[in-house]
Length: 318
Length: 318
Image (cartoon, rainbow over all chains, first blue to last red):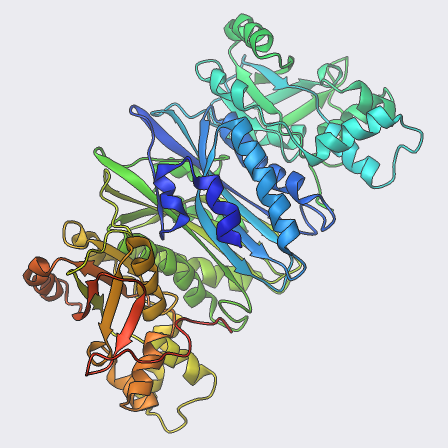
C-alpha cells in the first residue's frame, strides 16, 4: 500500500531508484553544495489529529522548503519518515500522498526515500529536505553587520491569528478574513522562488517560525549584534488587524506569534534598491522594519525609539 | 540543555555551523556523489524504554551506517531527529549523547544538524545519514546476474537469538554466550570498513535487517533473478547453536531473524579470490552461501538441493 502510494512521488528522481533500495543518491550541480535540513512534526504538538492529511503533508514539506529558501538554496529532494499512529488508515495515507504530489509539482522537488514504521502513536512526520547553493554561499544566521537594514517578506502574525481563530477567537470576523487567516496557519507559503534571489543581497537570513522577534534574536545572537525593530513598520495584514485591532498590542502579538514562514533578512543599506526590485519582480512584499546596531538582542521599539516591554518573544506550541 | 549536549557532536563539522543555523551544508568529494538514507526507530516497536540510552543511540546511528556500508558508501555526516517522550530526562539525554560521541569517533562521522521536539510519547528517533560514493557507483539491490555467487559477512541469526534470550529463552546458556548474543542484538557492528571495498566486486548488495532470506528476496525481486541458498552453508555462530541446537530448524530460524546488519551481496564467480582476500584483509568472515539463477525469489535449499519450506521469511517486530 505504502509502496504503491509513495513510489510515484519518486518516479522523476533517478537517484531514488524507485524507492526499491536502501539508500538514494543525491547530486549537487557543479560548483554547488547541498544544503540539508530536518524538521519533525508531532501530533498534538505541531498539528492536530483532525487536520486534513493533504494540508498536513504540504505543511510538513513546506516548513522544510522554507528553511532551504531562507538559506538561499534551491530545494531539490526530500526524505520522508512516518511513524504511523494506529488511527492512520489507507484513506488518510492516500490524501497525505496526494498532498505531497501537488506540492512536489508546485515546488519542483521529488521524493528520494525514507522510512515508514508502525507506532502506538502519536503520528510523527520527519522530513529531511535537500537543496543546492553555489559553493560556500549559503546565507547564514551569522553575518548581520551594524548599519545593515532589516527586512521581512509578506505579513507577520497571520498564522498566529489563524490559530487563535481555530481556538475560538474572532466570532464576529468575516468569513473571508476567517478563512484567510486559518489558511495562513494551515498552509504556509514558503518563499522558495524569492529565497534563492537573496544570494548576493542578504548578509544574514532565516525563516520566521518561532516568532519574528525571537527569530531576529537568533540572528542577533550569532551575528553578535543588536537588532532594532520599529514596531510600527512591522507589516500586519488587514485580516489580522480585523481580528486583533489596530494597536501596539496587536503588533506585539504578531511579532511573537510563530509559524509565519516568511523570510527575515539583513542587507547592507546599499542593497535597498535591489531589495525593492526583487519585491517587484517576485510579487512578494518586502518591508524594511529596522536596522542592525552594535550591541545584543532583538528589540521592538516604539515611535520614539524606546524599547517596548514584551512579555514573551516566541511561540509556545499548543 | 540539548544545545549544550549536541553542539560538541558537530564541533568538527564546519558545514554544521555549530548547530546554530536552520540548515547545514554537505559536500561530496570531487568525482563523488552523496548517498542518503533514513531510518526511524520507535519505542515499543524497535526498542524498549529500558534499553540503555548510550546503546540505543549507537544502534540508531549504526543501522543507518550499515545501510550506507552495504551501498559501498563511506559515511560522513548525519542528522538527528528526536521526538522526546515525557519520561526522557537530562540523565537519559546525557547518556544518549555520550553514545553518539563514542560512535562518531569509531566510524569517523559527525553531526550536521537535526530537530528535537516534545511529544506525548513514544520516543521516536529519526536519523538521516549521508555518505559518499564515487559518482554513479552506488552498489544497488538491482544488479545480481545469473551465475553470480552469493556471499554474506559474519554470522547470521545472532541478533534474533539475542532477542530470544532477552525474552526468556536459553535458561541453561553460559553467561558468555548469553551476553554475546544479547550484545549482537543491542549493538550491531555495521561493516563500514568492509562495505566500501565491495565497490568493483559486488554486483548487488544490502544489509541484512529484515532477515537473510527476506533480504535476499529483495535482491532477487529487483534483479529479476532467483537466489538459491544452501542452508547448510549459512554461517551460524557457536553461541546461536548453543541456544537453538545444531539443526535445520536453527538455520531456518537464523535465516528468518532480523537485525543482523551483516552485508549480503552477489558477485561474479570470477571475483571469488578477491572476496577471499577482502575477508582476510578486513578480518571479517565472508561466506559463500549460494548462487544466482534464472527465475524468481530467494529459496533455502537442503543438502539434496530441494527447497525447504519456510513458514515466514522475515522478522516481525515485537
